[in-house]
Amino acid sequence: MSTIAPVGQIYTDKGDQQMYSYLFRGASLIDGSGSPPCRADVAVAGGRIAAVGPDLAGTAERVVNADGLALAPGFIDIHGHSDMTLFKHPLLESKLFQGVTTEVIGNCGLGLFPVRKGNGQELADYLGLHDFSLPGEGICWNDLAGYAGRVERNGLGIHVAPLVGHAPLRIAAMGMEERSPTAAELERMQHMLAEALRQGAWGMSTGLIYPPGSYAATEELISLAGILARHGALYSSHIRGESEELVRALDEAIAIGMASGARVQVSHLKALGSSNRGQGKELLARLARARATGVDLGADQYPYHASATTLTAMVPQWAHAGGVQALLGRLADPTLWEELQGRIGSEMARREGAGGIMVTGCRTERNQRLSGETVARIADEWGCLPEAAVMRLILEEEGRVGAMFFSMAEEDVATILADPLVAVGSDGHGLNAAREAGDTTHPRSYGTFPRVLGRYVREEKLLSLASAIHKMTLLPARRLGFRNRGLVAPGYAADLVFFDPLTVADLSTYADPHRYASGIIHLLVDGRPVVWDGTLTGERPGRVLRKAPPSSGLRPPSPSGRRNRIKWK
Image 1 (cartoon, rainbow, N blue to C red):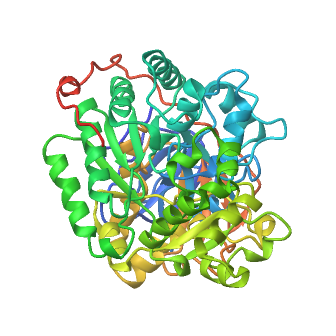
Image 2: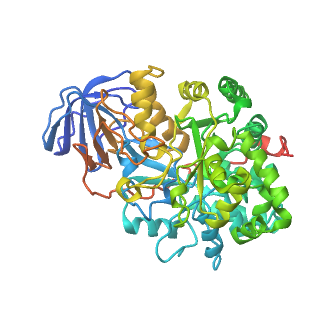
Image 3: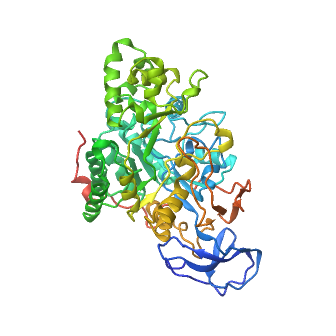
């Protein structure tokens, strides 16, 4: 049997005489560990890496000359939202052409399980605000096991690793109520979370700018994170604010990790708005100080200066209470217009104004042409205030309208990307360029990983190639707890990407987003080619990855979990 090599060490299993499926010769190997590239052969058998070393002996069904190509572990997108699109685009083509072989889904508190029996429509309506696509029969499952079975029935181009979304957890326990849970409701959430973890979820995510996640006090989150700590699972958070509230929101995430003992992942670390320009270094220093106190703290980032989310994020939290129809009712209520417009105007100002907000995803015939226009331009055409235009768009689109916000400084993007402990995550979807043509979307869904390799490694030399690959592979694998992915070594899954380091690049732009990246030559998922010679094969080897239970049983709660209680006010 092959053994797993130490990280960064070339290993050849000379005793293994089996016929290989593939034998790749002469690649420039960047193994994921952070070690410098070296020339090596890699053999694959039965979906696993069988041997790695110079001039491997043996026979193979297919011998491939990889001279001139870089070979790395398949990229792990630690923060994606392809659960929004996988029923519509199961191949997740835009991820394949980036070299992604595994994506973590269920981020930002959003997700498709758990579901209280008879309550699927409430969750479906809520997820409609976030542009989720569902199967034709709608939500027909209640837990992770049922959801995974339905996903795998279609087949997938890549693997997905699910987190439990805090929003569906809360909706299943108490609906869209703007209040703290009762003791019974909190116990129900804890039970459902524990059950999802037993079924293989890798952790839980929160989206604390989105109702109902925004209604949760810190104490509620600590209690749920304690369950995660016992299962050795990850707490991933879109923190409570990324502009004026940024420091306090980051401190809350740190406090949750300190009090619960859970591993904490800060999602898409950024500094929004002019008031935060140049704060990238201080954010990283704050994370480093927290780690020095013993908090297991990580972060991820997408390499763009624009963010993207639902346009309803401009609407104050209280207006979302009770669900989608209640939100639309309040937006249509003339007695609330003055207050709503004032709050929406303040939120736009924090994101640098209506001229920096580009509307995306309009679906109605009357508004489709407005996708790609700024809120300022739309307001001018309609002869109204920008905040009134936001309200009208949400009403006419019944909440299903998105936006991009151009409110980050490039210097902060580069500073955060350069940190060796910040993983790369797209925050994007798996899309089919031909089927989505004409719709405006963020280019991160098509270009995140090649953008790092092309712009920031090859052109700007902000990162070494080995460091960039580590941030896309072994670093996220260890944050999640993957045991056999993220490294090119015998015994690991044969998730492999071959790319041309001279041509790999993102081609998607804000103006022309639906363009696949260039330079990804071959991509294998569990040893099966999904991209070969730069062309999709149509294979669907992907599956829903499940976390195995901790080998030594559940961990006891952290001793600090009962002492360091910090409330969010």
